[in-house]
Image (spheres, rainbow, N blue to C red):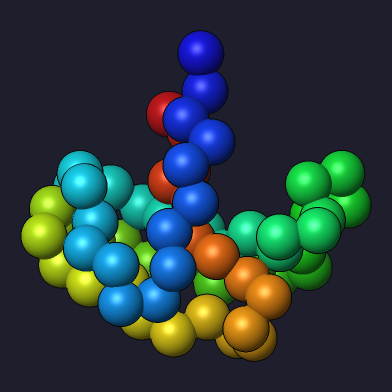
Length: 60
């Protein structure tokens, strides 16, 4: 089971891990050169490249 939870800039990370930008409407297409960020639990997500993007935890 994958985690499909998306996080907005300013949200607190629920777990330590690497998160990647995800386009809200681009689940099939993906994003070229998405931003990645490594956070510890409780840290806030940074701004995304544009307002239509969210953060998603990268799979293991």
